[in-house]
Length: 587
Image 1 (cartoon, rainbow, N blue to C red):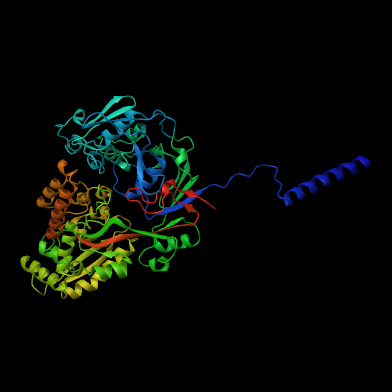
Image 2 (image 1 turned 180 degrees about the vertical axis):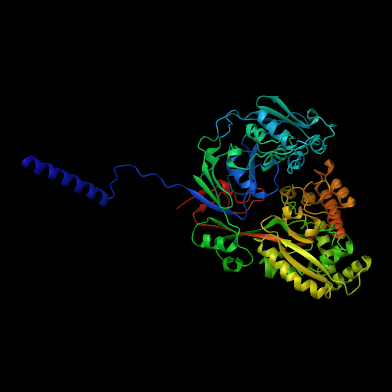
């Protein structure tokens, strides 16, 4: 009996000691460190993960985290600039002669399944990107940009002609871990690096790319699901709940793993602004961009940062609508241009944005040798002055009415005829919808009842997709396409509106505009910035005279980061942004 009592007493003593240790903070095992989770969002999900054949910019996010380019931009130690570092590339490009560059692939590079990445990987990926039968939408991002690769565009655009052989393209394998690029004109190492940071130039996994190919080799299902895509980046793409969220988890075996500090990245798909506000206010997001309806609430918040962006909002004008008798007339386009009260749109609809009747964005030229932006130059100012002579930012209701009367007369319409224009916009685009509703009343007033405007939602499709359903489905479409290369070469902001761009957002093209772009793009201008600015002025004047589009608002970006996010830079750096991918989570 005494032994039993002693055993019970011992058990009680052990329990009391454990309780005492717990009360005093004692631990029998080491506590796991708290994961560093960065929480951000996209307003729409990626349609596919194949960077070759989607124009949606949302693809850049999973590619930057979960795949690897040849080169990345990385913040300088002082936080005031950036430089290029090799990712798949072992180091900076090696110049062989004036036109040839070799890029070494690091030998430790591998896919997430452990298979090696080498020169053959890059050659296959780029050959498929440029394949003339696949006709990938993003092929031009490899062919031309900060550099122009010899015969790349010619090969890609030949269709079934077979007049340009792959061997004639300036992309060659030198050995198992070396490729060589031949350019059409002399370039710097930085310009070579800049060509290979876009998602379109990231490698594709050949087994899955080929497995998804149809018999005619005109398309592949690569990237339509996570099971049909392979990454090789500093994060694993662990979860893709389409339309809901992405989850990326850190890859500790990546060769650049030490540069990335988040353990996990959660990307929520949140089209609705009210939902984003609620998530931000409740601490579920570490990053937030207010819109026109919420900016006043946050404009004085100490967490707010801002800068003038690459984005200039504009209105696409359908010039081929068979149901609209004035759709192809320049007088009609000019009438629309002068009927936009940009000050009201920028102030009351977009909120704290800048009205503009010109198109070249505020960052264009900021990375030029002199740092002089086009808009600040004498040439850019001259175009701004010309526009303001028409009216504030080009707004002139009387001139708009006169042009519309001319359009009606040319089309054989009477003053009693009424044309209904279809304004299409995505359902989640609050500013676009509100602008359309504002212009419904404005057009009725300015054009004395001749023009009515109908606001139509694209019903879950992007505007680009909706336009493909038929030229009779739309007349006006608010849009914004940005070109990061315009930071160095200002004229490049016009790239998407050329007749040669396969998926151009517009359907009106002009030979004089195309020809002047070619003048700006001439190799001899790459090292003559003043001449480039002069020629860009001529290009912008043609754009405004022919009304390729109707510019409306220069976007000013207002962004917010939670206090727990530590960014690698103190100010916005064009070409790098805030370096958010290299940020850290602090208590």
